[in-house]
Length: 106
Image 1 (cartoon, one colour):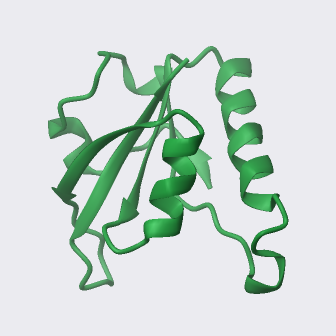
Image 2: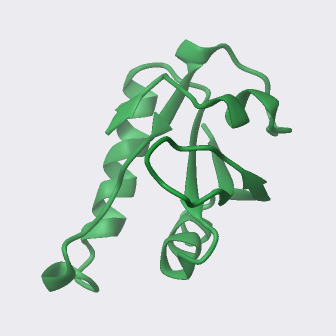
């Protein structure tokens, strides 16, 4: 899911660029079913996300991933996202709270 809505922790983070909410594309969910892991689907999804952001005239793409999701963290780093480190992010309905914030400046 992609949109311009960010959780509170995003407003408090030290992002590399300043931008208005409509200038940022936020990735809320990006996943691949297990049968398709390692087939390039995640790479295609990230590439498509960056293209959507460019088409919308965004300045950056931002997202978070659970601290223990090492494959996702490596994926975003390979694609040139900046890892802003571990932050506390509150998501209703989950007891997870530690997430790495990532930003890709367009």
